[in-house]
Length: 220
Length: 220
DNA sequence: TAGATTGTTAATCGATTAACAATC
DNA sequence: TAGATTGTTAATCGATTAACAATC
Image (cartoon, rainbow over all chains, first blue to last red; front, side, top):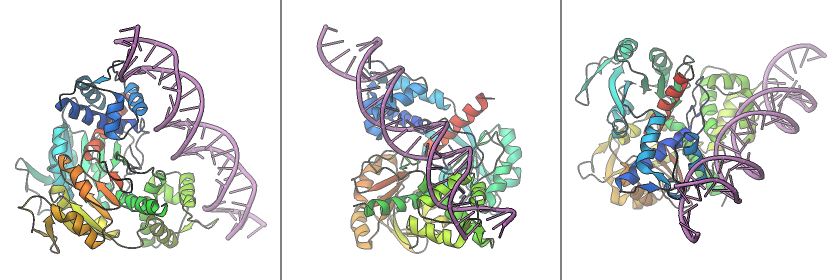
């Protein structure tokens, strides 16, 4: 989603098959959690309660993607998790390229949630000569941004993360010839039609929060 | 959204007055950018084109919050920026508390976009004795998480950021007695009715991206 | 069977778009 | 004035909710 947003606001990317996709990730996580707790079946009511989503919404979302439960019993957590992974496409691992090895880039390389969910950052790029050649996580080396396009092709990478300053983001995006880009730069990105962009804009989120806090306190 | 922010999916938080709020931040940034370029007036068409939003949407969004243009001329960038800041509540600075001084926490403290937009991280907390007492950014010291609640009250802080592991997030949220929480932990948060939560879930975003990439390539 | 819960329909709600009269 | 662009209406589109028959 380019959620102009939720999420984030990317420029040309395609129409999203609805917010249901985002919730699919939440159902997956919840199903995994319940499995780990030894729970075999979860009803739409239980899944929804844990996530703050109505049971009708849960059933509709899951049905929409062909994930079925058993009447009277609910959804088998193991099947549901496996099924959602297949729907999302994370029933295999995805190599990821990262552009920008600043504070945020460093945090993303070390983010445990990515690896645990099937994403491996396998290449890191920066323009800063002082960073190029630096060891990353003990297993990678920061490469020059000028090589990015070539390396992405060579490694068969389809996903990229942009964690560079806003002024550099557009040119980095142009060189990031991947199928999908997760953009953390606070700027809209113009990309070819066949590239999907999801933007995560930290300042926008914090500003939305401030608005909510004020709006909420005024209405009391 | 509690974006779900969008974004994300937070548990009890109130209904959001629509995605228009998120776009307000984008209009603000664009208006500031245009001002910096010496542009006095911007039409809804120009604002929209720069952001990938239709001109009708721009006019409706701005009108909804009482921001008016001049027929035949467009919106005066300076007035628009000032007006949106007032609507959002960022016509003043906001002190922010940060819980969790791991990789992500460190990146957020140094994130230039926050400071530039009126947010000052004025207190940082962690449970790890090895981190407590550490200098942050040359101007702060990591404080013990046990003191968080008390310190937030003493400093009059209304905004908090949670950047701790998922297992710890719920208890941290309970101690974070702020009006609004920006949650980076990949877990739903249950908070009192008068606390707003926006969740930013990095894994969910990357999973949505993978789904989009696949969906997009299948439809060709 | 009785009890529980799905899958799906119809109704509602909300957000977006198209169009154009108003007006600077 | 003529040209441009807003503000707003009505139409459309999409997502959510409520309800319940189907069925395990």
